[in-house]
Length: 218
Ligand code: MG
Ligand code: ZN
Image (cartoon, rainbow, N blue to C red; front, side, top):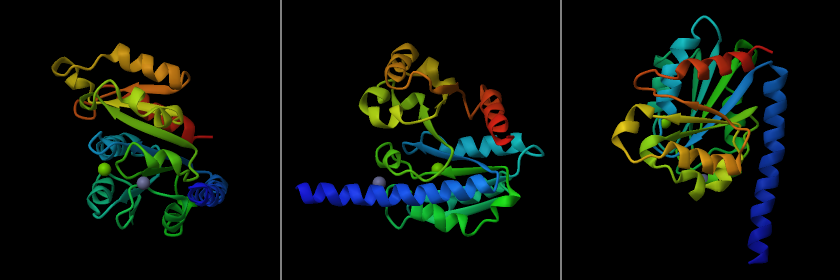
């Protein structure tokens, strides 16, 4: 057992070193970067799809999509107006790591962009453990998932810089106590920037887009 633990630690340390290299590269190119994590179906791709048209003419955006097998999400990002969209097929892995992002960065001329959006694999557990080297980690929660998620996935909620609460248009139809959810988040991550919104109706998207623009223009 102790040996297994040290192997895992070594993997994470190696990943962190590569993540630092990625960060230096992104930073040198003057690009603001986010790593979007969420459970499957929370709306990562929908968020990207709704955000890109609102950034048109304001920011040049590169999208990197991690997916276990398909390029569906990358195709959607490209169709929504990403100036470049790079697909990472993880070949079954349930998260992106810094090596995978490095491979994607190799395919981009970073100096051509203001914002790099990385869509992680849909999974609430391990993406939080693998730094990629982006400036911010954004967690997308969604109303139908339930209001207990901060309590069940404290490690994930604790480590993120921004929290999008998607599908607020469904609040009248599901048992989601916003107060209970918010209390859970507060305990773990009191300073997290939160954006309640609906990708379907567009409500709340403006504040999210403003946040991206603000951080992208240094
Ligand atoms: Mg997706
Ligand atoms: Zn994983």
